Length: 200
Length: 325
Image 1 (cartoon, rainbow over the protein chains, first blue to last red):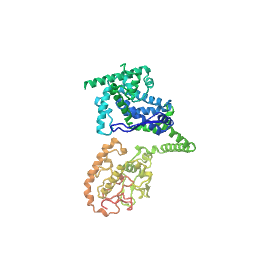
Image 2 (tube, rainbow over the protein chains, first blue to last red):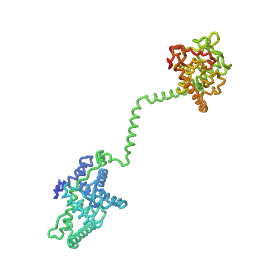
Image 3 (tube, helix red, strand yellow):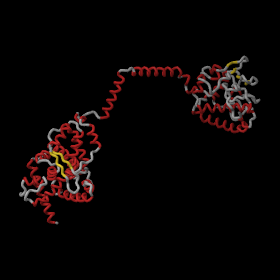
Image 4 (cartoon, rainbow over the protein chains, first blue to last red):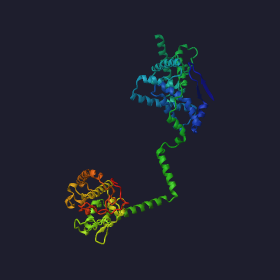
């Protein structure tokens, strides 16, 4: 059992991320009807799912996260696989929900201020929140220089912590295409950061 | 772009700066921030529907998705419960038998008593009195032997033979001298089912007739010679022949409402004229005065222009206190 506990700087809350056999055991218990096991799964993955949706600028990341886990709960008896498969499965649902939300947002455009306000998550301290907002906005602006496919790959690799094979399976692409996308994404970010540093 | 190996890409995506690649520090900082943001993101609050869904358990979703909706499941369970409850009892049979017996009883009652209780068969006390006048030659009272009203008309007794249980006809007795003597125990307000005609009368109408009867008795005592249904006191000497209102139609048909209203207004006007006399009437101690209508129509008590009243068939015990009392 491997439990990574990271205490983030700037007053960030301590988050316990369960991976490996721990998550697999919870999934097994949840499939047998354990409410507590599913609650632990929700606490382990809901934050990452919400962050993934937030970086994708979903209109309502928290609501979509609830929708994702409602579907996970409904389809859990039909799920077959280990902890890696379960993680990939959860983010696949989240990704599909994000696409649906993006289509819905295109039909009903929102004001940019509403989207910006929905992205910011307070951490409790005003100063830390201010820096977090600035950093969040900076990262968000950086992500906008990427194409949609590049952003999907980067976020799935980083936020969802999925492997190349899992991302390829999830996005229905070949592994070589995924590797090429992530390579080009990092190169684009590097160029953009160098340009920003030269301009400053 | 060629200076990034596949291993360097994996390290950068993992938030680790590759050894000897300080030029990738900004990108590594970015990916590290993304990692951190994903891990410090608190789980959003669980909505009620998701919480309830988890509370319901997974067993509900292990079945087919085409399960019966909740409201239909409830109805089906309720039906099953009622069916099981009634399975071992005879309650349905008893209920059906009771309903059938009640229905048969209602039908028999309607058939037996329907024609006698038609709404059009209602006859007001005045009309009953007139009918009694037509049926009887003379009508007297037991307490006033000196007052005998002559017959006002020569009616055909057979013409009212099928009028049903008329109060005056049913309870009236004939004296030795040929006069009809109504029993004193009969009271309009305490009449039983034999006075079925009055039962169909609206309460307000009956009350009005009582008031008018009381006024008539007072007027007779005062020598006005007025009678119920008679014209105003200015025409006190006029008999029933002078009254052109069709009495046979006093079943309060709406078509005659205007005439009845006019007559009532005239009587009220007359009453208002006599109120002062009644208050000043020194006959408050007359124990023999009749304050209630008799079963005999007032039309037969007319003709007493001498001021005597012949309708004193009710005893003192049943007499209502008059305003002068």
